[in-house]
Structure formats: structure tokens, C-alpha cells
Amino acid sequence: MYLTFEEERILKGFEGEAKARALEVIVRVGEALGASRLIRIKHAHISGVSYENIGDVGLEFIEGLRGLGARFSVPTSVNPVSYDVEDLSSIPGVTLERSYVEAQEAIARALRDMGADLVFTCTPYYAGIPEVYELKVGDHVAWGESSAVAYANSVLGIRTNREGGPLALMAAIAGRTYYYGMHVEEERKPRVSYALEPLVTLDEVEAGILGEIVARMHKDERPPHLVALFEGDSALKELLAALGTVSDIAMAHIQGVTPEDPGGEIKETVKIDYDMLEEELREKMPTEGVDIIYIGCPHSGLEEISKLARTLEAASPVKARIAVSMSRNVYLKALELGLVEKLRRAKATIIRGSCLIVSPFSKHNKGVKVATNSYKAYHYLSRKGVKVYLTRISDIQNHAKT
Ligand code: F3S
Image (cartoon, rainbow, N blue to C red; front, side, top):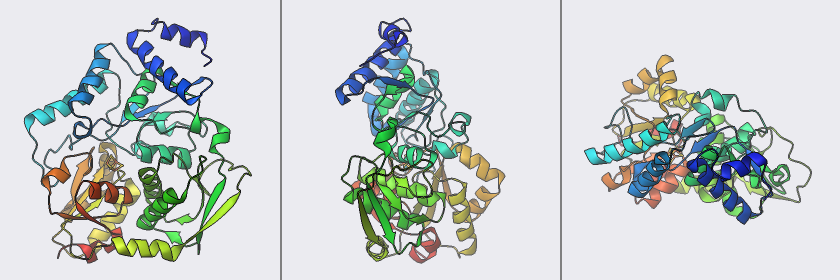
């Protein structure tokens, strides 16, 4: 791999041992993939920071890097943690041991000491992070968190591969990643197109199902091209989260959304029947009243929160617990706009900086039935043994226990 003079110096330790080690990892992975050079990044987003997911091994790894003097070379944000840092009781049915809380706090402290912005969200694009808003089409970043990666490439037009948590961490320290995959212009040009027929506008749950169907069908190495219409940004969020859940796809070229030229290499168009999508959705809808309705995987933005608040305002009280997860920054904005008050009036539980999947929710809620508008949450909660269904926000009243 070609390395600049500055990169050679970093590898030799002129900028500290931690940065040298981080860059060495990036170079080795890049060489294994066949990358010809490195590329500077403007931002990093680190996944795998929940103690529930990474445990003591992850904690020691992150603390070890801090101990070596590691500092992030670029603005760096982080994914959700294993509980709501401002209200330990907000994850339904979960009571945490002091030692568990302390371990999560230690992870957050080490990341903060290295320079991370502790936004604790999987939707950094909603969280009011100035360095993310300033990113322009064509900018290179290193993001972990598959749903955010797919959104970054497909909606924001910024370039990132699907970095695993440790690799995003190394890239953040090194300030560089390998020039490969989604960073390379030609690799982003689709060759297979998927067209929804008839071309109706999909809501967030239908969008998630479409993402799952495309992810299962798509075998080409290049990103899929999509011809479909979406109700709003939360539908795009759910589409891309589902795509990243079922496959390792890092981008979809969405007609009318993705801010770049798809090129002229489409060789095949696959039709996706809307009825097939609806049939799959019907199979996954509740057949009984559920205990918890969960919204906000990936973390909700204001559009989704407004829709939920409007629906709950118009609905009569239900026995099911409504839980919605979002970043702390989006929470503060929703508070300012009066949306939090509307949610609280409907007795909704707000989870800030965490979610039902990266928290110990499933361990403490055996036998509980959940409905969600997120295909990603449906997928992971099912795998964790929770009985889970899909519901539209507008159908909450029909599916909750009354
Ligand atoms: Fe985010 Fe948790 Fe879903 S981290 S993408 S809300 S699984």
C-alpha cells in the first residue's frame, strides 16, 4: 500500500504509540482487502459501546487504548449505551446492579477522555452534531452502526464503509481509513435495480419490509438501485436499517433521494410486487394484544416523534406501555417543541441514549409481547427470544392491550 511521508512517520510512532498502533491496524486491514492507499476522514462514529454488548473485554480494550494515550484525530460520536443515562428506570422491566452501571460509566469515561462527543445515538444525522451537519456530499467518514452507514451513503451522499466498532475506533484515532469499497466512486455505481410495482408511497413499516426483501434478493457486490417512494425520512431510516440488518449492504442508490449520479451500468431490473410486501407485513402483525409498543429503532427524529405524539393524542388510553427511544439532543429539541409533553400525557416512556436491543431488556422481560414499527428491532428482539410483531404507528391502538 502506498503511504505518504506523514503516514510513515505516524507508523514509526512520531505521533505516539496509540496512533501508530491504530494506523497499523488500518493499514493491515486495507492491505488484506487490496486497498492501494489510505484516505483522510472528516468524522467517525463508533458502535459497540454498550456494556451489554461488549462486556468486560470491550471495556478493557477501550480503557487500554486510553491508557496508551489514544486521542481521536477527528470529531467522533458514539452509539447508544445499555441504559438511559438520565433515567435508569426507563427501560421497561429492567433494574440494574450498581456494578453494571459503573462498568458502562467507565466505557463512556474512557471514550470521553479520548475526545468523543457522548451523543449516544445510532442516528447521528438527527442529533444536532455540527460536524455531521457540515459534512458535504462526497466527504469521507468512518462510521460503525450499519443503519447509520447505509443512511450516510444513501441519503447524505457521504462515503463510508461498514466499519466494525473496533475499526471505526482505530480510524478515529488514526484520522484515516483504507481507500476501498464505498470510498471508491466506481464501487458505488449500481448494476441491479429493484422497482416497486405499483409505485405507491411506503410508510415506515412497509419501507422496512422492502429493505428486508431487497437485502435477501441482492447478490451483486455493488449497491442495489431502488425505484420506490417513501412517506418521509423515518421511512428511509427504516428501509436502510432493515437493509443493513439482513445483509452487509452499506448503501442503496434510491432514485430521487441519493444525491449522486447512479451511472449507466444497470444490467438488470427486478420487479417487487407491492402485494408481496403487504402479505409479508400481514404475517408479522399482532394476532393478540401486545404489552409494549416500541418506536425508535434506529433512534427517532422529530418527524417520527411528531407522528407518534399526534397518534397518541387522538387515541384513547391503552394498557400497553409505549416506549420510544431517541438521542438526548433530539429529546431536548422535542421538549422545546412541546412533543415530550404530549408523549408524557399519553404515558409514553422516553428512552434517551439507549434502546430495547442494546440494553438488558430481553433478559428481564420473558413472555412480554412487543410490537414495533422497526424491522430491525423486530429482527433483533425476535433473536433475543422476545415475542415481537410489526405495527404501524397509526395502528398502535388496534394492537395494544386495552
Ligand atoms: Fe439503534 Fe438500538 Fe436500533 S442502537 S439501530 S435503536 S438496535
